[in-house]
Image (cartoon, rainbow, N blue to C red; front, side, top):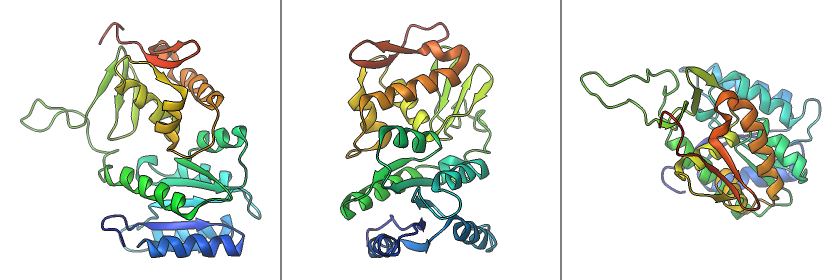
Length: 258
């Protein structure tokens, strides 16, 4: 068992052999696992945990796409509507490996996407990566005031400003002026990676690695799709992202308000 990596994980997989295999590897790595075969059972498992004292929750969901009744993507959207996305991680584990499927899964709110058949060591590496991200998110961060600490001029949370655009990495929030912008986890990671590059050009391959993690078979067009959707959501702040034709993307650093 690796110290500090134990999580409450819900596995939703209708193929018994795959479900048992995933659960065994996760338990051997020290995680606490609940494994079910349908979205209906998953909803019941979530409700049962939330009924426990203190409103307990699952830290990580591992979802198949093709499930009896409702699909894994439908359940994923339910998860994202229900609570703060920075306190729960979702890994899609599915045989649907076309680029359009991966884009749809990530846009629906998945943090990572792994295509079957998969290597168990890669699965565990993805779970460790999600665990590290969860470990950096302070409980209650989304409801904590973002002004200043009492008696201090320091901001409570780090703020990255690009013209009229503000990013709050600790709370996964984005604002254009005073207007909040709702982004998927993948869109936020992409925007944050560009913002932290401080004007340097990031290639599509670099962005794929930072947004989805190593080992995912995704073409550069996937990044283009994410950037297109991201620009639409940014509205008046969309011009912060600049296309470097044939190479990739960067953020403009000479915007008014920087």
